[in-house]
Image 1 (cartoon, rainbow, N blue to C red):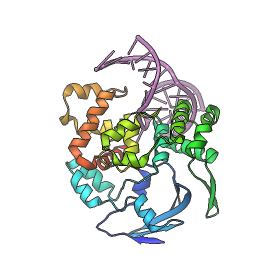
Image 2: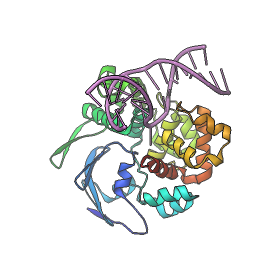
Image 3: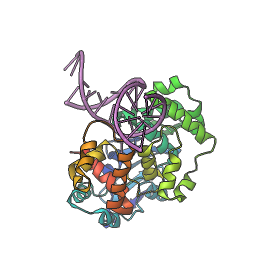
Image 4: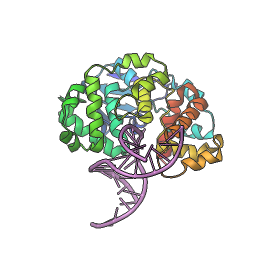
Length: 289
DNA sequence: CAAGTGCCTTTATC
DNA sequence: AGATAAAGGCACT
């Protein structure tokens, strides 16, 4: 199957899958292989043509954010020369609509890790606790269910490289397995209320909550602040903060809750209701420097 | 190649 | 309230 892309609606598959928002995609030749929910599939882009197998068009459009009006979003967040450069450099990068459960666990695991290590953890978790599915002569594994992860022992999780995150994954999985995680309800809530609700899960702080909201719950005003975003602020946006504050966050030590909230609020006020898109472009831009 | 630093942070403790 | 330390282990230099 294929989708014809409109040049007025930019999309770039490589930027979208390379920018670090999802951890389960692999490029083999010109095809990207991935598992989303219960199915493995492959997809490639050649110019304005998007080809894929083992998935339907409606799913692809939804998952890859093809329904987002990226032209309008870009215009809306294009507030200065810096974001403008990022928007131009990575034109067509879109925010995926990931599975909320997978996203929740992935970002709990992602804390204080680098991207290659995160990919490895998620891959190992899936191989160990997911269901095997075959596709194109290759084996793939679905992301584990909450029940499966809730029952996993600390040692088994440690073998996946989770380290001290293992207990957070276990505890959060138990809560989700009980049925106390309702993505549809979270999606309906206002951003701050949804974030407050997510903070109740063990291992979920402000940063993880913002990532889950942005990458799986359609809260595009969420503005996750990590070390890279902090660097972006220090590089381009110091004018928007007091000299005292800039000094405080300039060191190597992690930012405090109050500092997080300040940076997060700046992002949301400055870039508006699609601040999350701005965050992702700036994040990828800073990492590519 | 070894050793040091950093990693899309959260939590516990003071 | 606000600062500080501790927490796997992998990846990169």
